[in-house]
Length: 178
Image 1 (tube, rainbow, N blue to C red):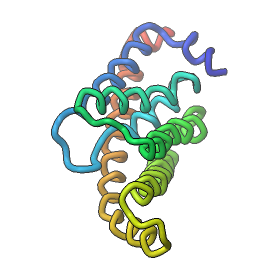
Image 2 (cartoon, rainbow, N blue to C red; image 1 turned 90 degrees about the horizontal axis):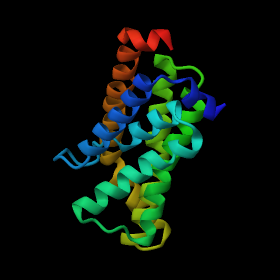
Image 3 (cartoon, helix red, strand yellow; image 1 turned 90 degrees about the vertical axis):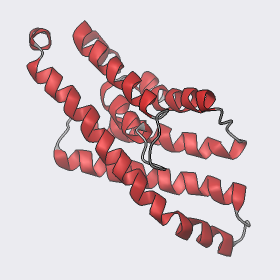
Image 4 (tube, rainbow, N blue to C red; image 1 turned 120 degrees about the vertical axis):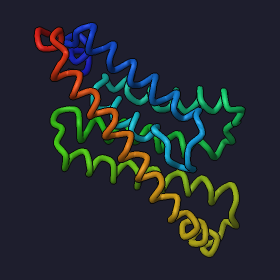
């Protein structure tokens, strides 16, 4: 089924998807409030619309490229952060590839932000906190404000990506013929 998604797309559809992905990935390089980034939403979007082999690569590649451009060098424990964004593509594939509704989008955003919160803070605990139960609890309690910001970023950028895609899909004449 995944390869038929690409085969059934017109060039206009594929170009719109690619343009949205590039735009959102570039937004991460602009100044932004901490943890309000488009990468989780990008994973949901790519997971919903691209074949699995490409979908997981999109958020991870966007993160790698933007980290390289910004001069951030990932430590080994950052693998969990990257895994969190990989999971957003999996959630997009499972929850949004076949059917999208407002409820499914909200559920996908909540699931994606929660998985990222758990994995990224496990990484923070391994890098910066004592590896004790107290250190673990302190790490996750300290991270609660960042969860709200991640959730906000995921929600905003998910609406932007899927809303723009559906608007263009609905009103682009060449798409209706495809």
